[in-house]
Length: 399
Ligand code: SF4
Image (cartoon, rainbow, N blue to C red; front, side, top):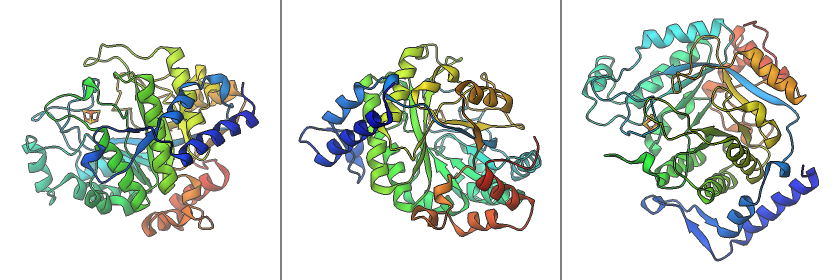
């Protein structure tokens, strides 16, 4: 295992290459269509390609969040070939305000802190029934509706974390102040066949969303989807692109390493353990320490990745299932405790927004909005629970 000194050296070398901006730069596909400048130094890519699990340190603690999963709509303009989340026009649904309120109330009663809103990407005009439904509730877009349901979640005592896919600046501005944090998976900087279709997902557009989040000061979660046709250089580029945006804005709180898994739409395999171990170590070594590295325990062999630099175990829910990957059940809290025991480290609960964005004594602590700050400061059981998680990492409400 590389010592802390060795890891520090690796970071210093990476920073050196980043600062030096050597002449050979890799341009990410699709970025020229947006006003963004994310180019990667080839030397930094080579450095990252050399990283192995022995080069990173084991964490000193694991964190996790108690959440509820709210699949607000299964409509999506894209048709990624590995995805079972989206439903085609005519079959897609959108949850009603009453359904959202009900699941939020049950989640808050069960001691959760996070309302995790999931979507496809902005549904296009083929989804007429979705827009008819939204119109009936007084909305002309998914984003104005998202704002309403985030307010419902706050009202019920949960902190919203929405993942609405690619967002324009106007869309994100509309919902940023009712979310504790938001996210979108970069997945990969490569143009891959798995994203093909009538409307293909673009790495440039994903990076544009990540840049907008930085410009607006939104604590953000992102990550890579491993095994969808990208190669090792693409994986290193993806990590370095995120690092470059984080160095510019400081807004990335969490990076998810997610293996693609087999399902009814994807039978092209899942990454083998050695590949998953190597890419996880690359992510840890390539990112600054303030960004948590997470693998979803319901999708990855977490116990075999403990020595690869992971320090977050994601969300655990006593109320809802993982609607993105319904065939893969959520691990119970007890399983997370067993993983922490296996690693010999404590398990600490966290909020959907990381502490450094809440602490008003730090520069980034001024980022969260008044409505989120008020929720945390509230003089009721919900505010007490949020503060308890922040202060002690323990939740007084038993699951
Ligand atoms: S992965 Fe996301 S963007 Fe792709 S089809 Fe599924 S929901 Fe849509």
